[in-house]
View 1 (tube, rainbow, N blue to C red):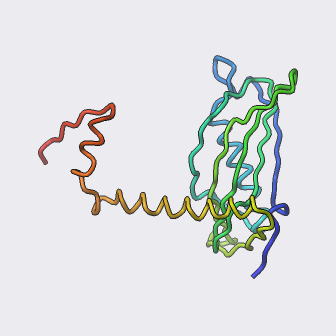
View 2 (view 1 turned 60 degrees about the horizontal axis):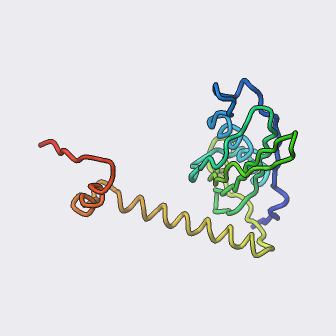
View 3 (view 1 turned 90 degrees about the horizontal axis):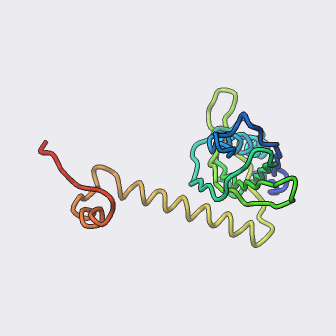
Length: 182
């Protein structure tokens, strides 16, 4: 089995934010930033696996700070976890006001990418060398996130879901239950 350092696959991309990618208030559309994030996740995963890689899932994207027209946006991507054919790419998005030099953290996310061969079949990827406490923490966090996602899927599987377990909790939220007779 082959292993690569995290640094071998890291990618950084910087782009000027243009009016064509903004809303009427001069803020950059979140969808445009998601597109850039997907591109850099693809580049990072493909560089690591040395194969075309596709997005399998995206774990939570919170837009923390708005990005203005005229700011520079820098996206940083690195491999946080490697499975047999999949990789978790950690992403960080920052914007920089080129007049003031102020840098804002705009969002972070985790993209799970799967390497594909020329016949579009999943293909094994090199492992990663964990050489810092941070890299071990990120790898362990990815393992934990996978376990939590699996548990959520199991808990809310239609054949396992117990309606009565959630009625009271739902009632304390902004929802009204009006079940129809089937």
